[in-house]
Amino acid sequence: MQRGTPAEQQSPATDQADALQYLRGCGAQVLLAKDNAVNREIALALLRNAGLEVDVAEKRRPAGAGAAAAAALRPRT
Image 1 (cartoon, rainbow, N blue to C red):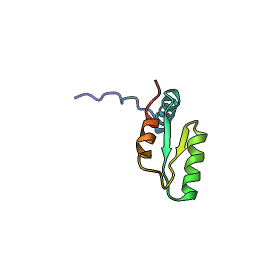
Image 2 (image 1 turned 90 degrees about the horizontal axis):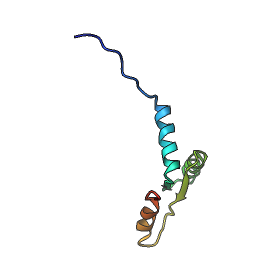
Image 3 (image 1 turned 90 degrees about the vertical axis):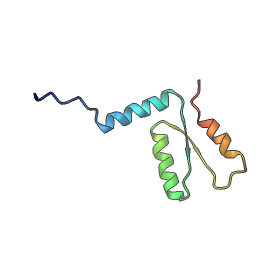
Image 4 (image 1 turned 180 degrees about the vertical axis):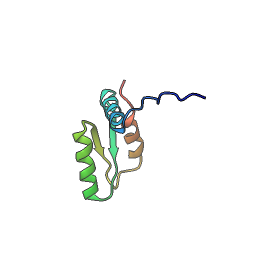
């Protein structure tokens, strides 16, 4: 057996940047569901600062709202 050269690996930061660029490019939307108001505001700010379109799930949605929210998350074509 011979020693080979290590495979090139992307850093986690590069992977995250690629994922964000992909999500922005395909028009993905994020549905944020957090009970804690402080955590919700922090997550909302982080996601919006990353350039993502974010919808916040309300605690008490009427029946069927989950299906409408899931439909909104489908990639736009």
